[in-house]
Image (tube, rainbow, N blue to C red; front, side, top):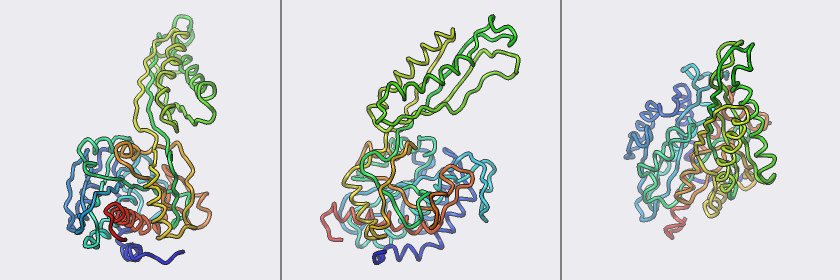
Length: 399
């Protein structure tokens, strides 16, 4: 590994406090739109650091500016704060105290990392060109937080934005970057079928929406296999189906929800019409009435070239180029993509897995998800270094 930067040395000194903060947040997780305690905890940390902030932004979001002593633009750093409706099954000493709610995606760690970056940047304000905006975002898991915060002005005056996500299948101490598309778009579909309920023993006197639903589920996959190029990844998944209560009754309604993912904006744009056509025509064939609600949520996460170069330079200086790999594309989604529709920026993966056999670790959103806390000072120092380095570049100063 290359010689450690001064910021990373300082981050290592902060590690015990970052670990303690992350564990506290892990024990008291809050779902999307309910992050009031988490936001209050963030506010107390910012008070401790003497950094002014604005709370209640876009729901429970917190926004703070670290203003440097030297003139320059504004760079934003973002961390998400919400947890998931998952029952924790880990064996750690600080599990969730709230049944059915778990930080199974590591947003507790992201919040701690950004607090660490805030402290590092605040300590070096005399050498900081411009301003670093810290965005503590709620409701990422439901793809609502970024849009809400943007509507309340968090990107006003921002030149670029940067963010990271931990990755438990990549060892702590490593990072992964990618030019262009990194993560897929995310859309939600809701389908309601209306048939004609009746006795299960007399199906000819009914119109069965369950049979119709099964045909629709199968036919939706033909979009992937026969209407989209095999070189353009698309996923159409029905994740829930609800109909009926009794085994001998044909229900009147069947309701389904699902997710649609793509890796290309032009493909995403064409999918609503294709799904509508299949749902309506199959429903007609089965004598059912159908209603499709296609809810656009987040676009493809497209990194911008210059910010990617910035992150790669910082990773190489902080960790060493041998600890940076090319990120594989994924159809998992992230509402950080919405920020990138407004200003240039980059999102990257930070390793949070075990040093050995990380590829076998439990992944994100798993009830046994585990985070290697060694990643916390890496995340804090990388975020702080990225902001400081880029502000210096953009202002024409000297690093």
